[in-house]
Image (tube, rainbow, N blue to C red; front, side, top):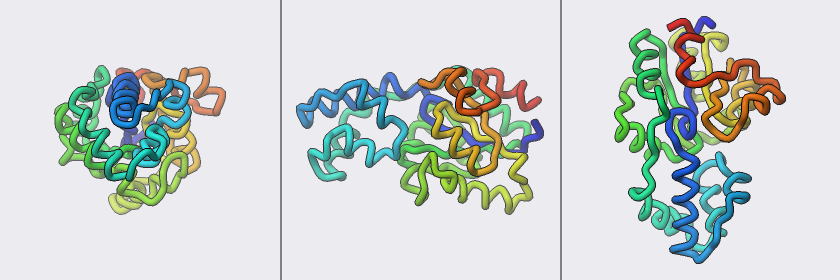
Length: 214
């Protein structure tokens, strides 16, 4: 694969997220709203843009501002962690003069906070786009419009861009935007499930550099 730019999803791609954040949401739902949030509800809506997802989890029991405050009040007890090889992979890509960006469904300032805490060189990313920074959200391919416009300005063609993600919505968005997709099996989607939907390349994150010949 001849690649000039790699765009990453964040949760369960570069960061270990779902297990710890499901526990976080359950704790907030119970402590603040006496809601017993189930794994079934979490799984059904996981990956939506953060604020509407949170409203579903907490059953619109309060204003969006107060629900966000409730969520953030317990955030420190449930920190996200690095996926194995995530930081070294990103640094290696940057060292090889590959453009690196993030397109995620969580709020941009929360994404930046986690990335900086875990040692990512955020200032070297060509884009860090959260759900609050774009009008479209995955699986809508327009979620990539901002990133693709920036890369086009640098002379990067569609066939020189890869999106790396762990979810089917990541695959659908990349496919429909006309960019290559690399599926990572660190989330809830298996290799077989990716392949059934038409994804061609499914690997572990540690193998990304070899795939791209970095």
